[in-house]
Length: 260
Image (tube, rainbow, N blue to C red; front, top):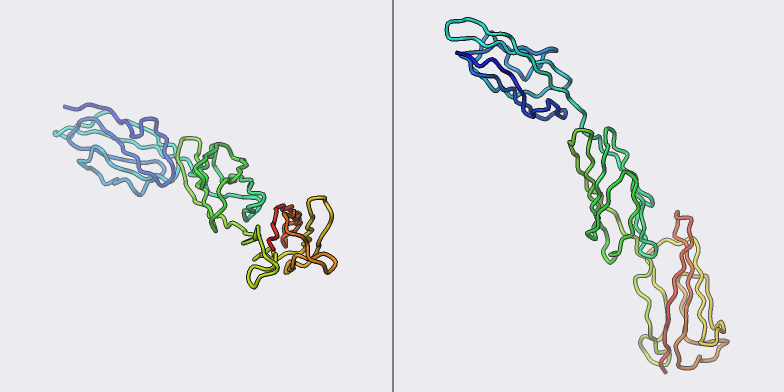
C-alpha cells in the first residue's frame, strides 16, 4: 500500500544557499532517491527507508523519488525541484566615517549583493527602511554608537551586520564662567583633543565690540582687552574650526561670564 506523492519544506521549493530543505515522500515500504545534478547531501544508495531526507543544495536541483512496496513493486517516480538563491553578501558604505557631534548626520548605503530590502536600526532607537538612508543622531555623548543593518534577498533570507561608528569629539570642555582675579579658574580656553587644520576664536562684549581673537587652538584669554581688565559681564564667543581631513568648517557659539 503506497501513497505516491512528493513535496518539499518549504512548500514553495525556494531556499537560500546553505539552508536546509526537507523532501517529504508519501507512504511506502522503501524508497530510491536521486538528484540532478548530484547533491552530496542526499543519500542515493540503492534503497532507503527514509521518507523525509534533509538536503542542503548549493544550486538549483531536481530530486526524484521512486516508492517501493514490501513486495518490491515500484510506484510511479515523483519529481520536485528546489530553487536555490544566494544570501546577501554584506557591504555597507557610510559618509562620513566618523560622527561629528556638531553635525551628527550620517548617510548610509547598503551595497550588499543580492539584496532587495534594507532595514536599519540606529543606536538611538530610531529605524529606517531603504538602501540609501540618512540619519541624524540625537545622542552623541558616548565614544561610539552602533547601527544594525538587516538586508534581505528576494525570497526573504536575511543577513545582519552591526556597524560600530566612532564619535569624534571636538571641545571636551569650555567653561561658562571664569574669575581672572583669583588663583583658580582665572582664564578662558576651549580645549580640544582633535587635530585641527584651521581654528579661529573671537570674543565680543554685549555691544558687539571685539575684545579678543586668536587662531591658536591652544589660546588662553585672561579677561583683558588692550591690556586692561574687561568689566564683570557676559561675553559671546564665536569659534570656527576645521578638523583635519574633513574639508568642512564648523561654527561653534557660546557665552562666558567674567566674575571679579
